[in-house]
Length: 207
Image (cartoon, rainbow, N blue to C red; front, side, top):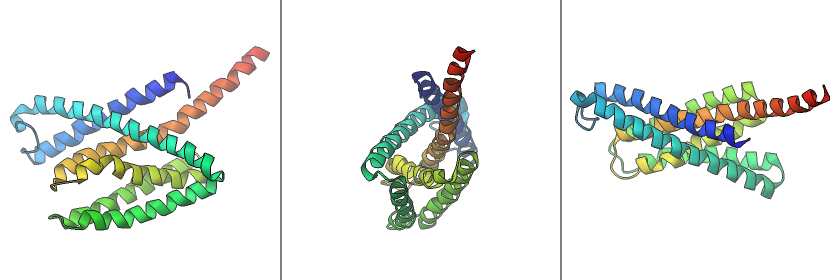
């Protein structure tokens, strides 16, 4: 992975975050005019603020993604065996599904939402993991599930703390999930392209 490809992944993830935030924020503003800063009459200003928020969420997603890649590298060097690290990720993901439902459900006014949120995220994570396996191999399933579920919730944890605000949670969780899915699905494409480009250089030299 060269610097040019990292830079492409960085700005494109921020662009995805901005686009998703503007779309989801506009939908929420249409259904709840109190969601925006100055109500529906200031749609342009609200869209600008949503876009800026999306850029920040995209950058935050990048930080979480790179942190996971670093963790993955360290864990593989510690465990030595890839299946051991994958097993730990699998158990952690299953544990997080049940624990998040309980922790978020406890002492909340909108109890139903904090059971539905982990379940919806789990189903969406399964969908992304299935696509990843279809495009790569079976060993990608568990790491993708860990990234899409556990890492996404870790990144979104600040929005889940304090006073229950469903709109704020959705506004942060949805773009974070999409940005993480985008990075995860782009990574193998970028690496595959780099491998192909590297292989073509000796071929041209031999010619």
